[in-house]
View 1 (cartoon, one colour):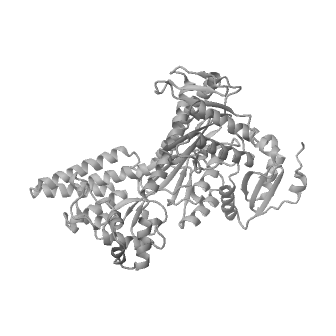
View 2 (cartoon, rainbow, N blue to C red):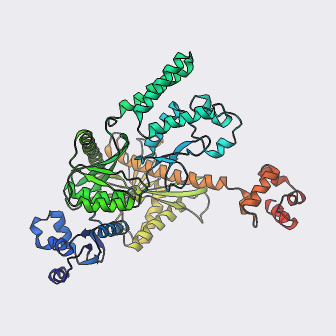
View 3 (cartoon, rainbow, N blue to C red):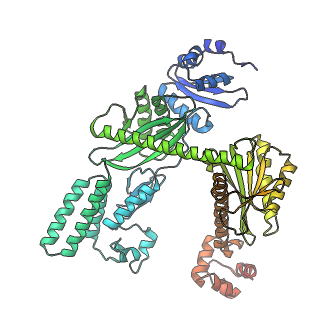
Length: 606
């Protein structure tokens, strides 16, 4: 069918103002979102210079059935609008970041009498100092662990700290100085807090010199235990510095490097604050249009800094490849974060070393990822041969059931493609309205809900469906597929062998024929991985539901008894068991509980 889009008529009336363009296919689905300083010139380039486009971009152009234009007052506002549309619509031809979580920080409550340090995410509402951002929680934990061992500032919650009558385990193992029981003077504790701040601010040389002076002073005064403590702090500090190759630099910056291979992209970001590298993070993207490194970075930076993440943007962003029009991008990022931002490409000395480190990390991480994907693809190909499938499956789903003697029954659905697990497609089903412990009914309900919904949405179905169970479970799955009219999926049951040990699984086909693969078969390893992931996901969902149910107090189900009355009763009687034993008269003695309400509470509990 010919493309109904009249390109000539569209371009003839197109404005030269800045703005955003959205490309749609014949079904009205979004394909691509872009921004331009001159809309007429930018959009025309897709059609007038087709021979200069990459094959993937040419494929995009052939699918265009409509283009919508939004004019913006300036290029900067067009950039912001573009990012909002990309985030809302997730166009398939744009590069898309999958990480929308806020970055963690270390929080220091320096206004408290005895300040504490801990991990923080989200809005910075509390009074205190925030250090970061760190690329992930493990980087925060590593820094907190070092600080806990070295300067021993408390990390316990305020509610715990205020109610201690004797030191906790952290004090006993030498990781806290016991401010909760005043085992350390306020002056000495404040000094530990100040040393912690110097470390977090990257002022390691000043901190080192102070510790050396303190050690020498303590040794001169024959306070050898104190001198040994400072000696250990100096040793720990030097050890951390030796592991950090960017301490020679100064200032704060994000270093963004790009590496591409086989249609995939790795963006690696180094987070440097006050001359100290807090950590790094890799983002893996798909190069849908065979864009250059510079073009990819130009698309990535707005998503990194304008995508709604809670993060502090440094004054400098150093990039591995040159991009056009850095001024507008830096202006918009600066407007959002509230201070001037510079985007640099041509750098020297320590910044050049940072860029080299980031490029090497991006390259190695991408190769490792591609190697894992190739390994997974090889196992998919082995699976085709082992199960005699018509083609290599591209999408596999597996179901499992979990419960405790029928309590809190959950069904899990995990999804794998040729690149591995697709966790964004995982689903957990609450199973209700069945006889407790009836796994067949649970499987029937989960499969029916899953695939009836996919059919109603017009979504694709998996090539292969694995059922964790024997012939009974598989038979129930076949019944569901027949009822739904689904014939395109291949079904297999994965039953434990007679020994019930890994490596002896029995695979049951739709016609009930059985086969056992050798324990070194890559296809069996893939099946085990998928089955185990379904099992893990089902158990995780089940345990969460069961624990939530069991931790719920019976008092919460009593009408007219809210949180305050529950607290008052628990304070009065000391516990649920005593409340249950109480008479109506005893219950009526609790403040706020009348005789009539006491009778209702007693009737409910008995």
